[in-house]
Image (cartoon, rainbow, N blue to C red; front, top):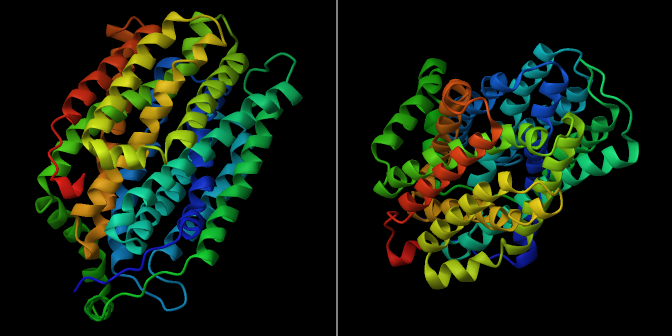
Length: 434
């Protein structure tokens, strides 16, 4: 029996999504500051992909499992999804505080694993939480509001990096040490990670499960520990078997899209060392300005995409946005001016807004309410599997096929975005699911 959900006001949807600000601030630091920290601590460029394997592995394991477990959870006091993203935010907060204090490369890599566990524990129950609360007609607004906070969180993270370098930087880089100006960005992230989640938790009550769902949850609690342990794995396997054809087609888009994004995040700092002659600190600051620019665009256009997708269909807007991202990546290596190189990020920002909103609203409409958590986890598996493939394969590709040249790496990523855009045109959705 499907629960009838009341429409929420704009500000109720806003408050519900505030927690994404903290989660995405953390993600923004992972995009722009983690790899420079690895470089500061002595990592070579060709091992950057494998050092980032924590994200794909933890995302592959943690998100679908937590999503499936949260589907079978209910507490009158704490709710269904909230306990998971509260614990995840607390883990993330502690790791962000400790990260710039890393005394060695192995310590920073270990912290990245724990940070990714926390972020993944928070992420998928949060996406399911939004789907739980909103009626179908408000899902596009809900997920594009998420996209707005994705842009805002990453924007703040990256702006803090180059602003703090400007205010507190200077001096020569010391091999094996993280510059002090990077500390402040991580300390702010530590605060935002828990504070913004608490805002959403306190402002947004969860909808109690239906009688049928409560009966299923009680039945689940009566199982033996071993049976409950095995159940999420069984449910994931069954959900994959029953997965709508649309999601299989989307997985092909995601394979090329997320492989390419991981290349961009890992090699944008090395690119500026090569094309502009910057040292690592200067290159990291320029990369942060790039990310700030595209996330400003994302924040501005996120909600504008709602009427556009309603008029032209999510598939068309999504495909065009991916193509625009490809244009940005082909253009960036050809510009050596640190100001003019920001202009292509307008296209990148539009693409990022589409990637962070449109697929989630499409999927949320076509999967059953009682399995939304596990399907949102599977959707994340479609993100982290390409990232895992990239971390394992791109190091040798970069070294042996691309001549260890970061310019070639960016062109490679642009080509993958063109393929993703072409595959996006194959996303067959009915009119009601656009």
